[in-house]
Amino acid sequence: MERRIGVIGIVVDNRKEVADKLNKILTEHGDIIVGRMGIPYKERGLCVISLIVDGTTDEIGALTGKLGSLSGVKVKSALTK
Image (cartoon, rainbow, N blue to C red):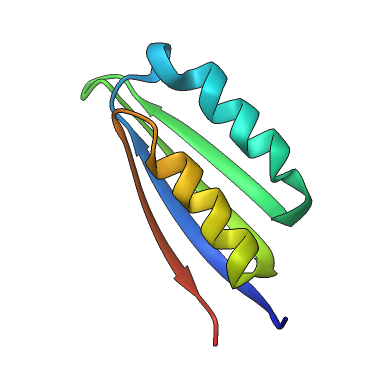
């Protein structure tokens, strides 16, 4: 399969409750993550994470699907063609 480069945006509403699960998922998919930036937004009670990924659509879809299944986690992605 063809590899694609993309950006994944993650907004976490309940960081304390899902941090361990979220980090475990990111570690499991670490082979496709090129870069990661996380910003705690304390005034709004949120955490915003951006990922740069390089993988197949199946690999990226597996990552976003697992992240999106976590309670209080919103995920959006944009991929190259």
